[in-house]
Length: 45
Picture 1: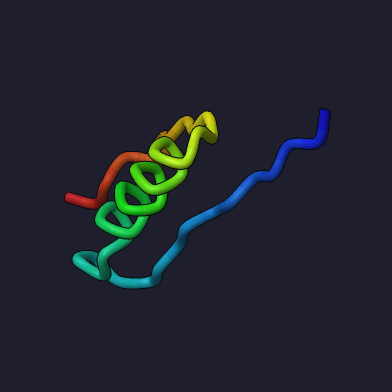
Picture 2: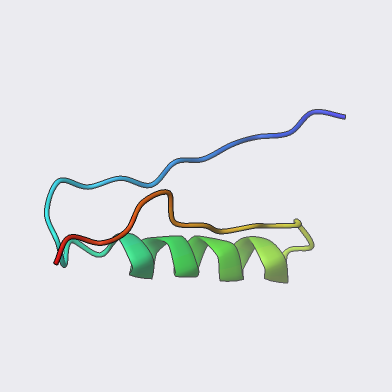
């Protein structure tokens, strides 16, 4: 079984990474693809 891994990144806060990830996950879920999203680090404070 072939699996694809996609990594969404950006160099600025408020660059739209969460929005883009959510959009892609919703579209892929709606098309029947299984998706998992996760954050790899804590946001800067």
